[in-house]
Length: 240
Image 1: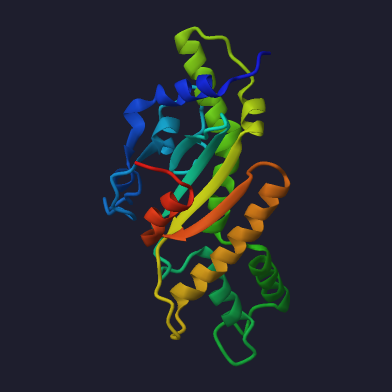
Image 2: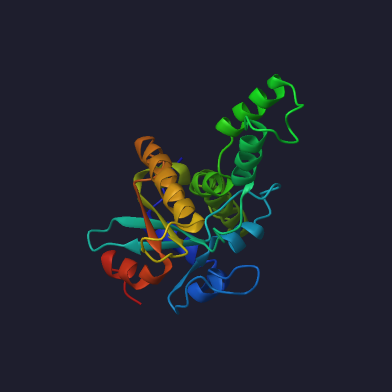
């Protein structure tokens, strides 16, 4: 199987021009509120995935896809996620922890009649249960790179009668960066659940993304507050 070139990959990505949209559009939540208001454009990977006929079950994808070709001919691929998450809302992990603490409280309460084994099992489940938001953010780049982009490429080749080249080998050789933008909370001295949750997720993401880097699935990652989008463009030397 022949090797895929940068020009061929770029032509494949550009064939999805109708999904080339502003960050304002791509970062909107279900209430049509954008996480970031900015005219800079990227490819909406979610929408590209939804239109892929080769995917029977919709995988998890990052919100946006963007590439940068360097002067030396090398290419960087950016997988962008906009996490407009209400950290004040309890997630499943939070609720499970609350119930587990109540059940295992030594004081008199309505759970006192439960067998000790039940209490032990609930605490064990709570210890092993993770944050579904964090898990989703970790899974998205994996499925984007290993399932979605190869499937989109295969469909592109079939529809245009192009020979199918080894895109997985190609993706293994380009620089892959995961960028996550999250809601920002002021860095003040007041303790609040939102800040604790954001810090916990930030710590968990960094640990998980480091494992993806060790496994050569991605090359690097960064987590930004939403107001830092222009700083991200400046840091990566990306121009409009």
